[in-house]
Length: 147
Length: 137
Image (cartoon, rainbow over all chains, first blue to last red; front, side, top):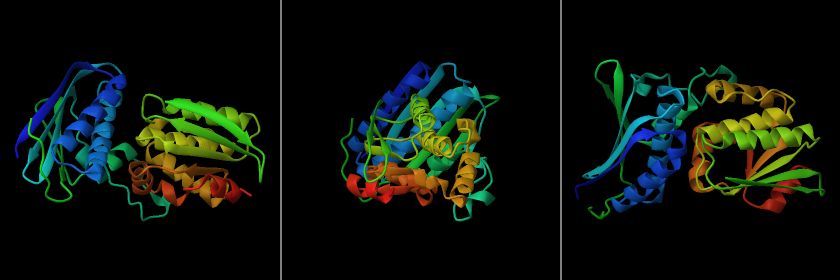
């Protein structure tokens, strides 16, 4: 099954997070995700979008696209923004097996984002604009509703 | 998000904070404010009812931690503190201060967020309200 949908904001703000989550949840389910997979995708996208809106745009509004598609047994979500380049895949990974006092400070939003999906990829051209691609394998083969 | 607070006296005095709705970057400060108010008012035990919270982002985790600190008499951390917030939780745990806060009934998605960030190691989670209240005694 191949299907994709895009939610496009000419100017997104922090108050749009709920709409983004609802879009991801509904679309992921339509594409064949079970509840756990949908929950994880919602968490990953919310944390990513929150970072863009709070830090990338510094609390101001800015363009944001969220595109979701199914590729074979994967659900793939691409977030595109025009914020300064930031690659969350290079952010230090905290070791939660260590005693907390020994952990390296960092962003737990990014940690949650990465822990919720199977693959995170970042690409950028120039000094502004990021594409963050989040991929999660479906829990088991399921039929999706194209559209 | 709606926040409702009620107080029970037995077996020990506990402030129950019932949340309804998603807890995210748009509203986590409401929970911090509620926790601070309760702490300032003399409350020593708080049970946060998460049963009606379908989603919690990392901002919500920081809010919970800030409530822990408020009840420990420490300054709540800014969300920018990132993993520094978790560092401070460990500090509180060393002092046994995290026992002032317990959580009730997180849905699976919220529970996974608590587990993935190590929060569930330092804040007790209960599924039954009566048992949660009794655990404060």
